[in-house]
Image (cartoon, rainbow, N blue to C red):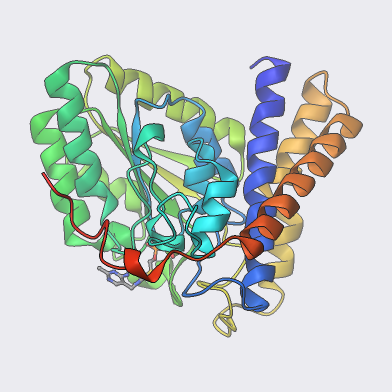
Length: 320
Ligand SMILES: Cc1ncc(C[n+]2csc(CCOP(=O)(O)OP(=O)(O)O)c2C)c(N)n1
Ligand SMILES: [Mg+2]
């Protein structure tokens, strides 16, 4: 990758991290209604995959979707306003954290239905195959979602129809408060997926370069008509399942150790400073710019107006 591309990758990962930290703060201060699941810790997965995609490619996301949205190019101000329920949010303030979508960016939607993205992505991939437009569709799912029937059916259908779908499983070790080592029967998400007849890959989800290189191959193959594949990324969740989760199920010191040893931003910084012509100061400069941007989005979000009560029933159903 060229220097400019690497700096863009860092900026996007940092934007996700700062966005999530700010959401945490604003939620605790009562400025965000509903329920919020943060993506912090998993940035290298979303950015490693989405760096290969254009606006024409589609992604389906999860309840932990902010990182996927930012990596796919959604406007961060529109997202923050959406999460705060404001009228000028990306979905007019009616979707909130778990339903952010922007079809103009190929972002088909965050999704409160665990196991919802795989079938959606297969539909999008079937459209791509039918139109022959060489685009791909990505389904982001968690380890918990890997156990869902919808996911199994979608993988089977993708193989049968040979559509350009890539199933990305972010194994962050937990589905809500239950360990993946308990809930995933085979303890091997990629290995189990292989039984459906698709190529599978395992990557270190804390290493941007590992994700990026593997995703590059899977996405290229899908574009060339070689069919679907699966990527299991071993990832880490830096917070609770949702904001406010007391996380009593974690081992003592687990989070501190993860933040110390498995922070994908730290790992990326160390690598690009050593192996590429990039200086710490350049990255620090990006940190400052991103923090200013996120601060502005949060402040403008707080003062933005709510949707008018008259809008309550509009945008609920699509009129043909
Ligand atoms: C169909 C369905 N079943 C259960 C839930 C409740 N639920 C929300 S998130 C979640 C855990 C998902 O775990 P995982 O797929 O590993 O994603 P992560 O939260 O780790 O990102 C569950 C069970 C739901 N939203 N939808
Ligand atoms: Mg999980």
